[in-house]
Image (cartoon, rainbow, N blue to C red; front, side, top):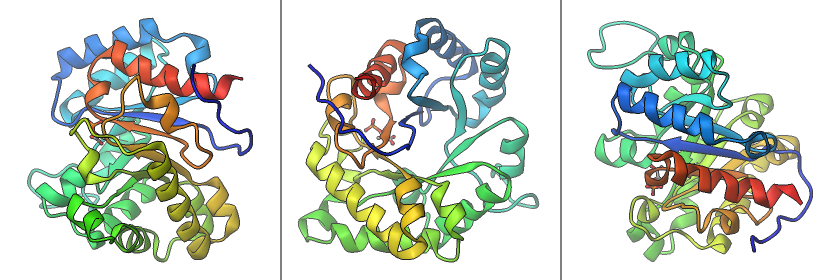
Length: 269
Ligand code: PEP
């Protein structure tokens, strides 16, 4: 029996699938079509769903979800902080917006730790995404070493404050934040629901300090890190975790649907 979420709040729960560097455009077609066939109206009536395929799949997925009215928003995993120019290998936020991309992951831990993305680059990219009318999903999270050293909160504070510094309250309210402890990503070792809630409460408090109470109560906060169909319901049962960012379990339609249904079940009663 899924734990029941306490009532209150009008933040629409949000489940996102980050495919990372998996699935070419043909595989993407099969996966999204499979997901579209399995999704029932009650799965998405209260829960918003996005998929974040690799860049080369975006046009294919866009055409499919629009053509077949599949209730899934199109997402990207990253973009440049520049609109155009001599930036070999980069993808412009303007190009993503033209493809109908609605959500862009910004500062995923793999971008930060494998590709050296700094807090300042995260902030610049976040602004570039906003500039083109898309919604940044701003990822923050501590490493195992930082956690062991008792530095989780200062790390989250530094990442978040740099990302939202100078934005107005309305811009902050419209963001999605993803608390993704690095030690939980792809390890099979998810945070506990209590740890995820504590981090979400802390992040919401920081948003309140920076942008006011209205922005704090409006901003959606996802948890990400080894989410699956078994732990999804428990992770969103607490009042401040508004959804999930899912890696491995989003690569298969049935497994992703289990996560979506876990979340939807919490919001039904
Ligand atoms: C992620 O890629 O953001 C993620 C949370 O991955 P996983 O669900 O595989 O841990």
